[in-house]
Amino acid sequence: MASRAAVRSALVGAGVSALCLALLQTLLAQRLERAQIAQMGPEVAFNLRLAELALDRLPPAALARLSGLPLLVVDRPPRGTDPRLRRQAAQLHADLCQRLDPCPPVLPAAVEVPALWVGVLSPLEPVWLLAPLGPQRRWPPDPLLLGVSLLAGSISASLLFLWRDVQQPLQRLERALAAVGQPAASAAPLPLRGTAAVQRLTGHVNAMVQRLAESERARATMLAGIAHDLKSPITRLRLRFGLAQPEAADRQRAAADLDALERITGQFLLFAGGGDDEPAVQLPLEQWLAELSAPLDPAELELDLVPLEACIQPVALGRAIGNLIDNALSHGRPPLRLVLRPAGEGFRIEVWDRGPGIPEPDWPQALQPFQRLDRARGGSGHCGLGLAIAARVAAAHGGGLSIQRAAGGFAVVLQGRSRPPVASGHS
Image (cartoon, rainbow, N blue to C red):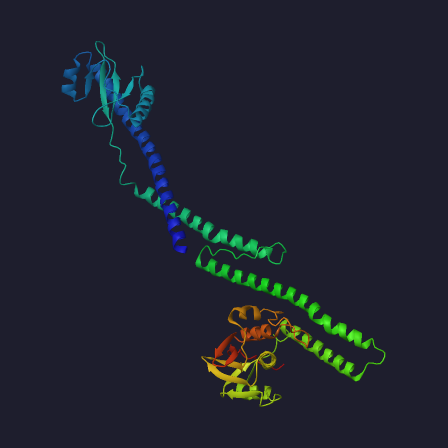
């Protein structure tokens, strides 16, 4: 793209240079013609006077032989049709009219070299004097004119390049940035045009607009999900508290609904970015994961942890791993296996279970917020945010979420790497 733009600008510059050179050459040629006619005017006038005086005593042939003047005795001399000769004939005629009286006729000559016929006053017969002109130099061009033309072409090519490959893309960027946040703004990415720096800037703007659009969609989905997921437990609580004397079983169900409300609220807050400001801490991951899984029954969860240190957000990453374990317990079959392995410069945490797992075609949908692959499951504090939160936390740690299958097992894999620690300061 950039090379084509440079070639296009170079071709335009070459065309402008050629046009400018032709124009300047034409102007210079006209000026040189006028200077040549002004220089040869006195000489032609002198030769005319000399010839007129000599013709009173000598015939034209003898005068031509003795003086060397090119004379022709004819009523109508051979006339040329070159526009340049006609123009020079008119200029010489005007010059001679100012010097001689009467004014002699001047005609373009049809001879091998550029020349003009000038009429000589003769008492007996019409005589014409041939006035040769200097040769017209067309190539090579004048060095000064060539330099000026190349400079004009270079400036034109630079201006075109700046306008097409810098100014226009920047104007598109300006309009796109001005439209960000407006309801009717187009989400289509801007084309990558212009210089390499402008293309990089356009790519950054496209990525920013895409992130803003995704955030707006997530916000709208979250607001809709809040109303949907909180409706059922709130309705049940209202019915149970409406009883005059609720039984112990109703009070237990009400407490379960309150726990579900608390879980849903916590999931919403975490998905909305409540843990983004958590400082990163350097710690041994195998000990941290062992402590995180301590409340679970060892018969349900097997640990396979390799000693590894990393700088992580322990609360956010702990909630993500907790969501993966909770999903495995809810949808898979025990026993579960929690695996920690190094992965390049980062780490890899795998949560295995014995269930069938998520089908490969449904995995992208499962990562979307508020998407429940099991439509029959509802309540119990589940709002379809578990995998979405885990994916967001993994992305915050420079990694991602994926799935893996093996003989008799299915795993959700969270990959990441150390985050930069927050420097502590003292005031």
